[in-house]
Length: 192
Image 1 (cartoon, rainbow, N blue to C red):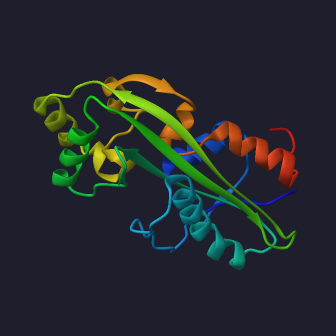
Image 2 (spheres, rainbow, N blue to C red):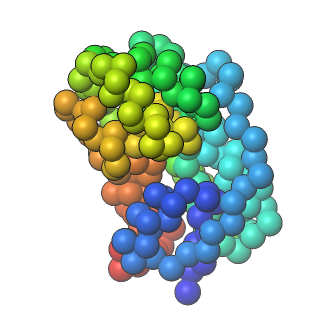
């Protein structure tokens, strides 16, 4: 049986793989993301996801390792995780009433088989105009602090969305349709 490792501690990514019926192990990477790299968004998320996958793949060359990284881009600004309420407030004000893109890069790598696949997926989101009260209420939930762009579409953040163009799961943090196709077609995972 093929061994799959998810190199991410994200509960949302774990949930997608669970729902797909995959058997996998979670081994988080100690890779430190550098959000200041001067790369286009699609290249940045691929670079960061590869950076997360590689140390885990080197430690487990017999396994297929999957990692991902998600960013939000609005008016040319890259929005990662805010970590503080002040940063979350700035990000949500920046997103208010605008269309932005969510990019998730994912890497699948198997060292013993000398195989790797890097891919980026973009989903466009149109946000409604947000009042300061709506922003403050959402920040008070604590939900936006560890989410790229300061919102989680699968939770309270969905009420801010007027339109979505592309993969919903990509916005949550893993474009599961694309990931499953790569695992099946390029890495030999069956029954998915």
